[in-house]
Amino acid sequence: MRLSNLADYAVITMCQAALHCGNGRVSAAELAAETGLPVPTVQKLVSKLTAAGLLRSVRGAHGGLQLGRPAAAITVADIVEAIEGRIALTACVDHTPCDFEAACNMKPHWPIINNALRGALAGITLAQLRGPVAAPTPIIEETLS
Image (tube, rainbow, N blue to C red; front, side, top):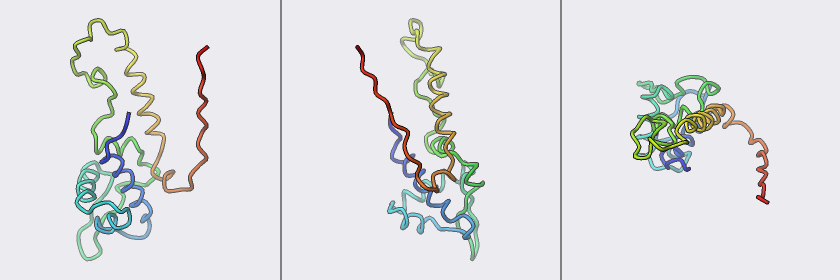
């Protein structure tokens, strides 16, 4: 599973916007320059993130963009869903008909898996992402005997 480039860039853009908290507002052009992303891409992201309430646009001489709510109240799941729509790993989680639905023994399990993934993304806030990087949790690989 992989996030789209646009969802990845949205997380990057939101992290950069979060660095401006308390320092006034920032423009889409400034966010593009600071992240190295193309201006049209950042403008497209800003439009979607603003529509989702994650960013707020203020017009006027001292206008610009600011977070729509505190960084601690914005999660990676919020950002991904603003760009991609509801997180749904499989068609049946999204209630889309499937050719194998009648014989599928996994259908009742996919919502559990989907909710676990969404919960993991919802457990990471923008405030955490703008802070120091925590040591990664080691992944223990087991071999089948």
